[in-house]
Amino acid sequence: MSRIRFEWNIEAQVVDVADSEDPHLRLRRRRTILRLALLVGLLLALIGLGAFAVRQRLADVRNQYAQLLQDTVKAEVAALRIGDLSSWMQLQSGENDEWISRQRNQFLQYATLKAQATIELTGSIVGVTIDETRARVQVLETISGIPYVRLWFYERSEGGWLHVAPDFAFWGDARQVTGEGVSIRYRAADEQFARQLGDVLVAGRARSCRFLDCSALPSIQVDIAPDAAEEVAWADERNLQLLLRSPYVDIARADLPFDGSLRIQVSSLIARRLAQAHSGLQSAAYPHDAFFLFEAAIAWLGDTLVGSETSGRLVPSLAQNYGDRRVAQLLTEVNPRDDMSILQQVVPVTLESAELDWRDFIAWRLQTETELVASRAESDWLRLYDTSDESVRIAAYQRFSNNAPMQLQEVIDFIILTSDAGMPQLQANVVFADGNVDAAESVLFNLVNNVWKRAS
Image 1 (cartoon, rainbow, N blue to C red):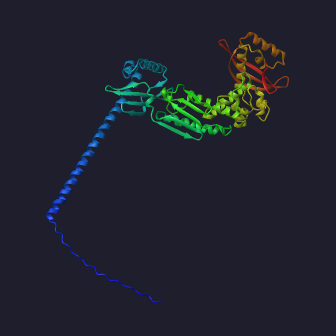
Image 2: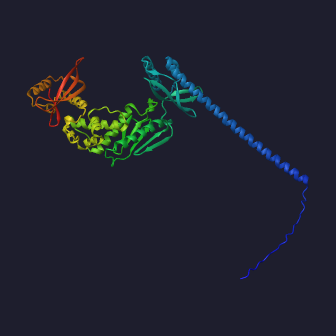
Image 3: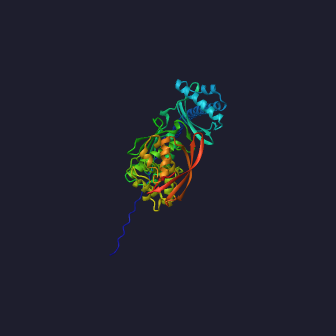
């Protein structure tokens, strides 16, 4: 097939239209527009400079107030350091007599610490928050070489800043931190405390739930509030909801605000709830050995939960020698009225060869004996003894009749022996207090049916 090519040629006509506007008028109009633009630009620049000046003035005022606040804090600390009560009280708000009395007592407490050479008042400020006429300041001090933070509150008037009572309404905005199995609600002033608490509980819960049955447990929920009635309390124990009072209401460690008695209380409450959920046992019956074993397991679990050094002997040695799951097994096996023979179901060797540390158990037994003698609970008391030896029975009843046993001080150490009758025997070296004199004594226990019974 042949190709056909079409070509189109179009000629364009150019039309030239002349501009009839006067060049002078056009130049004048352009100058007018330029002047108007310059005036608008100048006006905007003046407005910007004015706004900047206002902002700068406000910033200068805020800086002056902030500097005045810091000077006030340093003046308070200086008054404490030199023992100037008059200057200290002049910087306190006279809002009510209770606050004045409280601050006067606070001054005296500082004076006592200074006399003991245990406090260093550095006057260092580690945090400042100012909101119009109110402020809160974190003030650093060192007690026995440990850094602590106090949260002081201030109000500004024409006379300057004055120290006021803690303002719970000025604790900062509401915040929340969450982790695996843990949720913590708090306010800005408790930021460092809440985050440390969260880290500890997340790690501790994960560590504990590796050997405990946590499948039915809800997440741990903690609310931190400055106005909580108690330092630590359950808001809802069943659902693992805790209410904590902010440590900054009084004083908190600067580096470890979740520490001391607060750490112990929190760990104890949560550990008991975890142990109860795992074992189904709410409590054990005193004075049975189950009481000691259950409470010792909870104490060990509480230390494990927050990563503290374990303070017990028997249960930590059980975990160290045979694994954490043996403690979980003990919690599962123990019943409210069991004696210590329940341990034989947990360890894979005989109790006398298990290399367990019996010191705290023996101490508890001796203390329990003292309490049972004082309460005249003869049947419970007699179960603590190996009465197969008549001489032991006679000596025991002599103590019971005297009704004034020596007070236990400490179980120093022990060794496992074999008695003359061929049974395992524990010899404990014990320090008793007899009046104002401490006396060391060896106390013997025979292993009767897997239970240590006193034999001396």
